[in-house]
Image 1 (cartoon, rainbow, N blue to C red):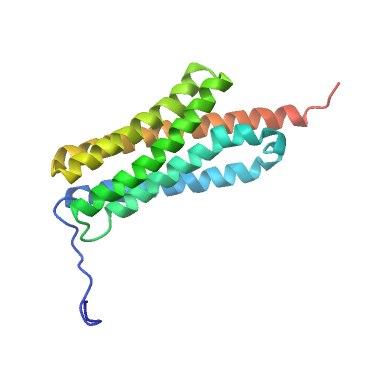
Image 2: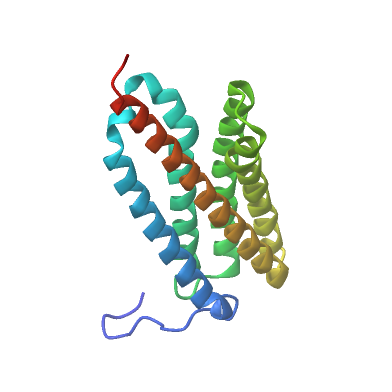
Amino acid sequence: MASPNQQCPTKLPPMLTPWHEFYGLLGTASAALLALLFVAASIGASVLTPERAGATRTYLSPVVFHYCNILFLSLIALIPDMAPTAFGITIAFAAAGSLIYSIYIFQRLLHEGPDLADRLAYGAVPVIVYSTGLAVAYLLLTRVIRLGLDLLAAASLLLLVVNVRNAWDLMIALARRATQEQRPKS
């Protein structure tokens, strides 16, 4: 056990040192976009009614979930002295749970019949990203670290970009509904 006089190490393990700025920016972007989504949802709260709870669970909740997931990944990647094994195990558990959730959402999308773009962006891409997360975990645990970290970065960026698209899609849908509800009924 470290004595209280010892300082916490300030260097990242060699595995993640080149990625420090990347994960710092990725986490910052994710946190900012998540905060903006909360603001937008609170402004458009009048259209988030109990009758639309299913749509909220299918479309809004996954966007929040994915932003939180990107933020979580960024934070664990920035933990000082994270060992490759610990990082790989953490990625494995996070990816497995996220994959199960994403498959559930994808199945809902297939039954509700949205357009192809929504099925891909809300459903297929997250399933691919979290499946890649499991592959990354395997690579990290078998010490194929560089490829694992490159794949993790690519998957994280893909999820962030697709999630920005999904958040925009949601905000447009909320604005349309709010406008329709404000029009006088004839």
